[in-house]
Length: 370
Figure 1 (cartoon, rainbow, N blue to C red):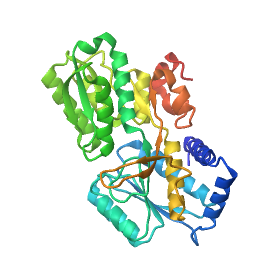
Figure 2: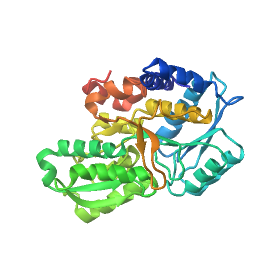
Figure 3: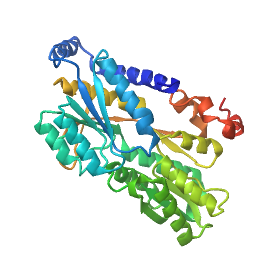
Figure 4: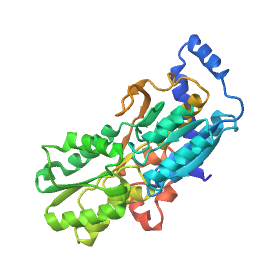
């Protein structure tokens, strides 16, 4: 594991410990915890981890190793993760889930490609006595727990950042909205949050739901928007994530638009952070992956042992199929040139050297990133 992942894993452990300690405010609760731990399943735990795709850097680079690390810590090195990535194919993910159910994992952590399509596999797991934690996206079916970020808040943060950056120019032209995939329930929430801020304050000239979140699809959509609206009429772009922002910025540059209008993003991918340093992408949303991963791992280990999630999950949320799901929503941060040091560097996600390669060295120096 490389240096920044080790630091991120340490942060994850600290976050999970803080979550646990915050819940153990009395001697009675401590006693209950001790009683719960005596119910531990015989033998080592096996947790199935199903992630949706590998186009977005976070899943393979952060989520998988951080969850593996935290499960190991929580089980004194005996627990293991069985991993599968669906590469954006819902039927593949269903097969992966069904295989894990057949192989009798003790719990599943599922980040669904398609929240509706996964419901049948979640039901099969439940019928087999295997609890399921929904990770990052709220899957349908009889879910036992859910951890994510406040996804409407993500959209609000993006929309507000764009509005603030535009200032009086907000009324001078059109905004292009590049939303995520309609199969992802989070994309709908990002859109709702952004529109709650932007509606009535900007003119949305073109809006797209981007198939499979793919940068090349966002690039094609943006080329279409430029043709339809005119390159002098676009004052800003709402991009739901960093990968799409990259495709959008390529289209803007290809059309000869200079200076570039402010473009939002999400996920604080390395390429996105570097574009922010370079002044090409205005902002991203930093979502503290170590915290989310730590909580997912702790939830999965608890339900695998037959323990309650009450000490972790203080919120209940409803899906389209299930009411009162024990849930944790982790806060998010607007990431701009001004706070790179205080977010992704401070939390050990990236080092200055990783961000400030030769190509970006002068830009890093100019904003005090050393």
